[in-house]
Every structure is written in C-alpha cells, then in structure tokens.
Amino acid sequence: MGASIASAAPVPDPAGADSRASIHVQATPSIKVVGQNVEITLPGDEARQVTIYAITGQVVKSLTIHPGTTSIDLKSGYYIIKCDRLSQRVVIR
Image 1 (cartoon, rainbow, N blue to C red):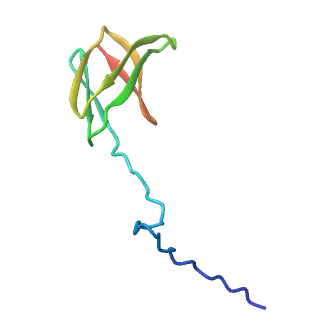
Image 2 (image 1 turned 60 degrees about the vertical axis):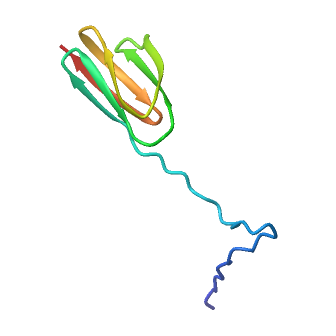
C-alpha cells in the first residue's frame, strides 16, 4: 500500500498575521588582509561580534562592528578571525 502525505496549509491567525515561521538569513561578512590591516565588510543592518585569536588561541581583540567596512590594525603574525559562524585564518606580514 502506498502512503499518502498531506501538506498542511497555514492556519489563519485571528489577528491577521501569517502563522508560517519566517527564516532570518544573514549575509556572510567578508574578511581580507590589506597591508598590516584586516578589513571586515559587514553587509546587512545588524552589528556583530568579532573575535580575533592569535594562532596560540589567545584572544587578541574582541569588538563589536557595525555594517560597512571596519579596518583593524594587527602586528605581523597568524590570526584566526571569528564573526558569527565564519572563521578565517589570516597572515599579516
């Protein structure tokens, strides 16, 4: 016997709101090295937390950045930059 699958239509909300769940998608930040700086370009309209780690795991900087491009000056070395779910390794020469 074949199984049948019924799809449920959204139930109208008495207040007039749509009862379907909305999905919030954040655009991915862009991280690039420019000279002795790391430039982080943050799309969208929400500020986000950025943490920069030395290759040893020590936190070098932790800051909140706002949409647009933020330039962060770093000494020569290897770093891991985390912003939301994005982690990127960078080398400053």
